[in-house]
Length: 137
Image 1 (cartoon, rainbow, N blue to C red):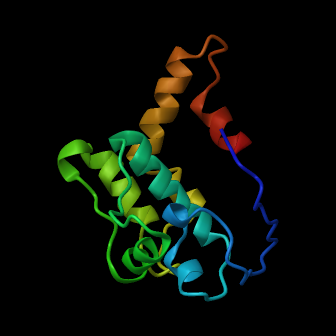
Image 2: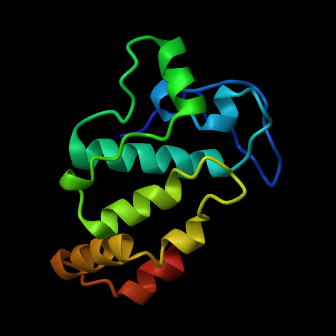
């Protein structure tokens, strides 16, 4: 499932237009700063958290309240609903400072992703090797 209605191709550049669904917006977007590829890592962390817990990490009921939470609070991470590997992965994605936020290549080495890929490989009828999966990424 994807929505590319607001998709923007950034080849090493930055963007300053505020686009996207509020819950998935990184702090730099909400703060109206220029932003780049790290916003996608933030969104990945939010999406992963929602998929694993079924809940948004923000309690605001309006766009402005959600924006305030994104700018001034850390997303709520219910540690009792997440295993340690998932929690470590999500935390790496949701670092407020985009310069310190994990990069996609780094995330591929997190145990959470390795376990997901290994499960996919073991259950795949084509039996693709993990090495081949990494090369394709």
